[in-house]
Each structure stands twice: as C-alpha cells, then as structure tokens.
Length: 361
Image (tube, rainbow, N blue to C red; front, side, top):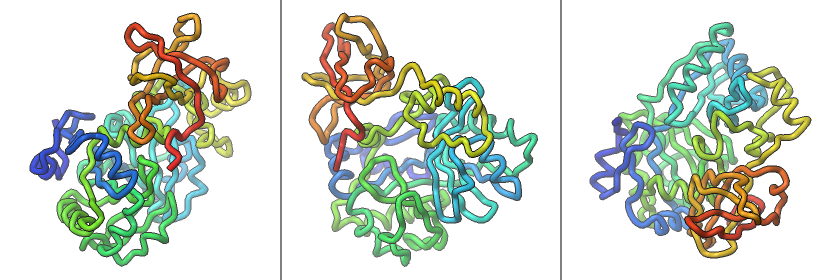
C-alpha cells in the first residue's frame, strides 16, 4: 500500500484511512454530510495525489494524443485543459482523463489512479509508431483540490496570480503558497468551483499548511474520498470503474460531446457508426420517488419486475435529501420522466429518470 506525501498529516488530523487504488487514502475526517456541505457552501481541500500524471513531449506529442484520445486536442492552446477519454479497440473506454497543454510541445495527461499502469501501456503501444517522448511523473507529484464557492477569495492571499481571472478548464503556472512554479488549474470534480494544484511531493506539505492558514477565516476543512463521491455524483460526473468501464462506450455514457471525428483515433470508425445508429442502452440519472438509498450493483427493474439494468453509482444526496443514482437502461427507459424501479433488498422502489445535474446550485 502506497502513501501520499501527506498520509501522516491526514492521520494526525484524525482521518479515517482506507485502501483506495493501491494507496492509503483519507475517506473522511468528519461526517460525510458536514464535509459535503463545507464544499458546497464554503471551501474544502482534498488530497488526490494518488492520481496519475504523464508528460507527453516533443514534435510528435500532439500526434500521439490525437491518436489515443477521443476529444480534439488540436483545439488546445497553452494554458487550456480538456476533458477526454481513451477509447479501446472494442468500443469501450480505457480511462477518462484531462489533457493540459503546458508548452508548445508539452502536454500533461492526468489519469485515474487505478488505471496508471493500464493507461501507460495502452498509450505506449500506439507510441511505438509515433515516437513521442513519454514520462510517467506520477510518483513525484502531488495534487490538491481546493474546492468550493469561497476558494478564490480564501486562496488569493497566497498567490500573485489573479485567481478570479482563471476561467473554467484553464490553468496558470505561477507562484502559490510560497512555491515558485505550480500548476493552478480551474478544474475539479465537485461542481462547486475552485482549483486543483499540482506541485512536487517535496513541496506539498508547505502548500497544504499555507492553504489551511489562508482558509482559516473561511471555515476551510479537509475533505475525504466519501464526500468527493457524493459531490461528483450530485453533478452526474462519471466515475471510472462504476459508470464508465472497458465495456461502456462514450455514446452509452453520454460522452458524445468529447468524441470528435475531426481526426482519426483509436476505434473511431466503429464509434462513428455507433453515433449514426445510436447505442442500444444509455446511462441515465434517476431520483427515488420514495425512501431508500440506491447502491452500486442494485438491479434496475421495470413495472413487471423484470431486470432492465444495474445501478452504477448511487447515494443519499446530502444536498437534495433523497436517493439519487446512475445506471444503464435500454433506450425505451431513457427519456426524462421515465418511470423505473430500483430493487433495494426485497422492495422495488419507484424512481424517475431526471436531467443532470441533480444539484443545480
């Protein structure tokens, strides 16, 4: 089990630590609802240093990224980021990721912790013919997510960068918390605004401490993985391994918007056909009409009790006070307002298909 550079810090704060993607990670410091509300209404900090980072560099860097990702990275200018995915050869998804254009011929790919080795091997396979420079810097870098509506105001005192000027999915390389060069990225997995800070492992303790000093007057809290999950689910953000997998296509998952046929990429011909004909099932969002908590793996059933799908993510929404979830169902059940049922133990609990996000802010 690997530790992040801040594992001892989390333990000293009384965090409940759990194994996650091969790392010893804080799942919670306080109740999940308290942490969730801190991010929705104030500012909270996540250590997500388990995430993977690859540098793709050189004159062939863009060619490689264009080949392995679904989105059109040629649209990226320096200082911009892009959500994308790595399609596999059989219609599914190797991983979802964020692509940053750091310099003219330097790109940073940020991938899911559980997929670092798989992603590296997949990209390397296609790089054999392209020969871009690849570096896995995952072990050397830390990532803090400072999230919430008060993040800009709380953090402005520890940087000369105008945080309010960084637009969503843009980033700046600048000074932060006394460190000269960090990536300050207006991205996140919560839907409540804020930043993600990339720095070296040797720098992250200083950054963490300065962030909490700066945020003290704003009620800043450390936030664990449990609240990260409820926050992302309220926005309908996909979680790899649950809502998207090697067996789910971008079109099934509602990720057609990051699938661009302005270029040739892995399995693009088959995905173009799927776009033309439409997938046979889709990922839908649902809210329970009655009391209950949907969980991953629960059956989705129709009015006659026939299984039509499975819950991929589910929780009791702290913001809405009701059960919410995602799951794949046949097209006949995908319209907004469609009625489905979630099999919770012996009860088929009525649910309604709704439009994302669940949380409107």
